[in-house]
Image 1 (cartoon, rainbow, N blue to C red):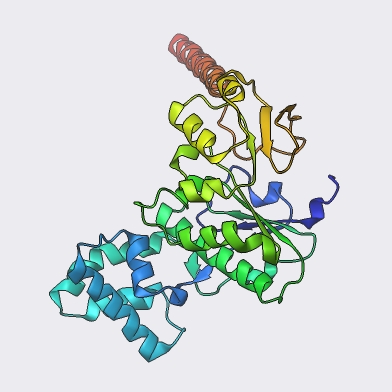
Image 2 (image 1 turned 180 degrees about the vertical axis):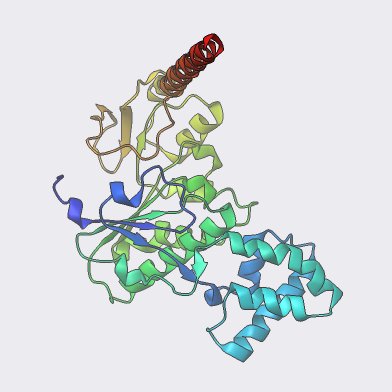
Length: 321
């Protein structure tokens, strides 16, 4: 048992494609958002309705607004589909084909997991967003970050909060790409420290992160970077990274990193130890898996051959009788 393992909570959405089952992990909790929390515009984003499809978008927004007026917060995905099915409006019927996509996203269910379940003293909360499309992940990140920042800024939660955003380029890309979570990430990056909210952006493609957000990162831990665009993004966001260190980045080995910024007086190179917990996000070992597949195929082939030879022997014995 690892120290502090009981303080780690994994919030897993119903669409999760995580490689470990709940039986293999401790402290796994369900994460869902009540479907009725979504606005009509949110639903359009999640099911992929383009801005130009104004008639279909208006039909969906109208259906959601009608449900809110008639049922308050008590309606579900099924009610949403039903109201479009009953409508004789041609745009509602066209919208129906796209609206049915919402059933794929079981994370939007009957209840919302309270932010207070995630914000607890000395607790690490891991939110598993695997199995969702980018729009769903964007909405969930927006919700969690907004709720967490409000709790701390309003002093409803009195302890510092540290936020780690994996695949950050998905949530705060360059400004020509629309993202719901952009504003709250930018706000936390600029103002979070004075309230006690600290944020770490994690990405393998820093060039795909909004340059303003990247420049707000006071310290950087940089692993091997070969792409020239990513190198340029790092150089432009960090005044303390010299050209010589920048040239060294493509040659870093696994686990080696350069640390620059306010966290250290001068740039330093470090060797990060191997993890002691289970791996959750690395690529599979293709060579190992192919070797296992070949071994399994050879075993099955041998069993089939032995079974065939056994049956042939029995047939021969019956022929002699």
